[in-house]
Image 1 (cartoon, rainbow, N blue to C red):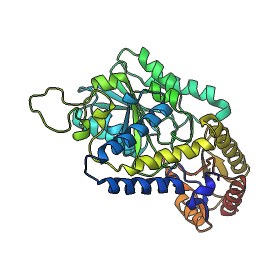
Image 2: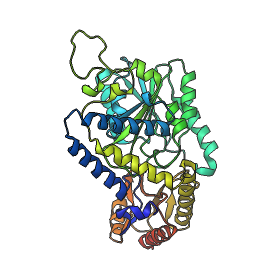
Image 3: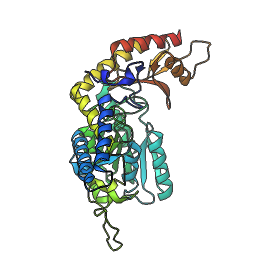
Image 4: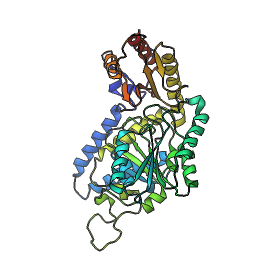
Length: 400
């Protein structure tokens, strides 16, 4: 059976919100249920259960590290993208007067964390303008050069951190993370690179970018179609050696059985120093199962090719509709297709949220975004061409 056939959420609707949350396949839910049952059979707090829990965590860490192209000691398990970003971010050795360079397309959760960090540590924040870079898949080289150009223009001598998503959640533009990392290595202050990979894992190949970034945080509940509440973060060797844990619990300790007040270095020397405490073990089996199911749809490059074929088709269909303007100037590099609907001459424009509600009443689910104000539809390997026709026809009905 295909991934689509295994997802009950896709049986009674046309779903285009993979960038918000992916549907959970039935085998993934069954794997989680079996894990819960196994834990209860062993006893949730017995000497028999710990080897099982350790195997679950280690096998998941190894699977995610492999996808990220890093050694397992560089991969920390997290609950979501935000915790994956914030826990190592707040442990970086930053000092008063250091500057943070944050792109104008970052998610509000990450921006808010950086703003609060800047307030507490008296840091300065600059903006990296990438929102206006709108070249699509066939213009990627030009777009990459534009990103590197604005980066060079906005780096300052005391810039110590750059925050840039791998795939912009609002415009759908792909960022040249490895090239950005290389540029930062040449900068005198060697800024850290934090990458929000919420829209990357499960949709595009991530190994090159994840291995190049200092903090590469992702979740399993979007394009990977895993359960919510589980993700990971790939960390560079210098973050592991230079950053301190911020939210501290027994999982961050080398010896979790005791607190030694005389120990000057109680924490793990690998990624586990950024893990905290008790989390939901059965989610590990669910995410691994979802990743296995994705592999059956093809490897990462093959899946991206299919996703691009579908997003290319949708982009062209939307571009052909009067009053509909895709945000990117060319077909998207991945599965995020953002677009704006312009009001007819002499008519008041309809709020994107109203259009989402109207389409939802027809069983078509996309989402609206605030900055820039637009609508966003996502194509995945489980999307069908007929669904794209249905969506395009429905959108045409909203503007006619």
